[in-house]
Image (cartoon, rainbow, N blue to C red; front, side, top):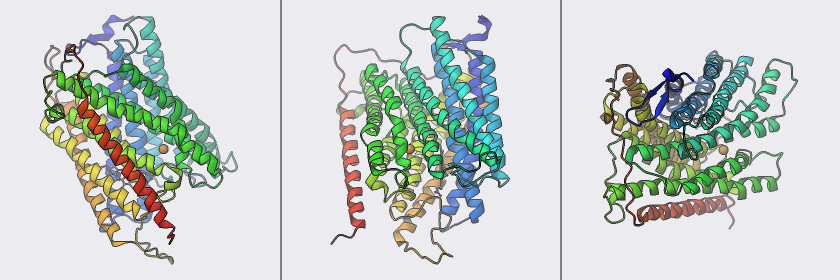
Length: 556
Ligand code: HEM
Ligand SMILES: [Cu+2]
């Protein structure tokens, strides 16, 4: 083993593989470039869906929507996730990267795939949106791009597994793998399932675009595509939760209150989440009601349970740490005196709260077979998933970036107070945006639709005036979030190039100390109050939706 290929981090004491460090850097850079590209498209799409502006023409709207969805949900998130795997594997375990060369091949494939896809979209050859449902057809290099990107990501995932094996064999750590690595492992296992579905669907679709396969069954396409599309969302949730635990430790010195419970909650994701793919098919005619009800209930709720467990254990671990730091008065001193001025902590808390209250509650409600009929294909759906993958996952990743730059690049963040503004603008902006979008959707405003007013249509569906108000709220919130997004790209890029270098000496970074256990039991009563507020909100929203559903039938 080449010992020179490591350095010792003075701040964490970790043995850092230089190969892992380089791989983290390139994947993170690619991710940031993707969020920049996707963000520009976001503003164009936003200003088109806002009736007061209605910016793009129809063709350009669908092109920008395709570009936005893929660059954000696929490229930004997955590049960043592979970077997380190179962090949670080799760096956290103090190991070398098992296959350094394969790491670069995987990265190259992901870059090649994403370029092919973006070129196909920008040249007007793939206005098929992110889901690229057959029988819509794009140029063949669009599908080839998906295949290359997926194979590249798979190489990154396999490299992570191989690194776990190497670390164990070379005894770079003792005991069981840390919780963060365990969470990343969960994400990686689910990624294999997702990517297998990707291969099963995109290989025949590619052959179809080349004229080798005659036709594709649209129902079959949707069924398998969502094995990729939904499952990927669980990669995002697992990675986000792993980042929550990590940020809890870095910001307030939190330690999981019960590791065993947290680990089992991760296992529930692996076991049950794939069933939830069915919630995308609830209006599809070829599937039986029994299949739909079964797949979107029972089993799926066990995955929801997993998220609720993490949603409790993460704030509880923060509460325990804060109380041991001495903020132990009453129910909420731990929360009031938390480091709200630290962008990493602010991102963690906003991500947690918005993911749970907005993303989680709407997701479970819209995913119920019966309620789905009044939410399917309305703006309620993108309203829901911007709360999960944007306010949840993206914000958590942004918060982590403010630690990755000092720890991996060894540069200070330029303008830390601007970073704080960034986190709040993005989080609050997306919350307003999602709320406006979801509510506009409950006035039956369709998603993926260029013209809310149906100006040239023979059939003129009535649009209630209130819907325009909520679309305006969506527009303003979206613009605020876009400012936050632009700041994120600006701050990270300038920090990486121009941030002050951090000397490799201990004590240079504000990493929170782990508080000593006090011997007696530390209460988590504040968290329990929050948990019950959450459950009450959940119950109220769920039953309101059944009431709205009943109102549709006009039973007198
Ligand atoms: C400033 C931030 C953002 C704004 C203002 C924004 C805005 C929008 C808007 C207006 C739509 C169109 C909805 C429709 O017409 O049906 C949309 C769709 C979408 N957005 Fe975003 N978005 C943002 C960030 C993100 C991020 C970070 C992600 C992923 C991590 C994301 C993922 C998606 C996806 C997957 C779609 C659906 C595409 C489709 O229907 O094919 N967005 N977004
Ligand atoms: Cu889903």
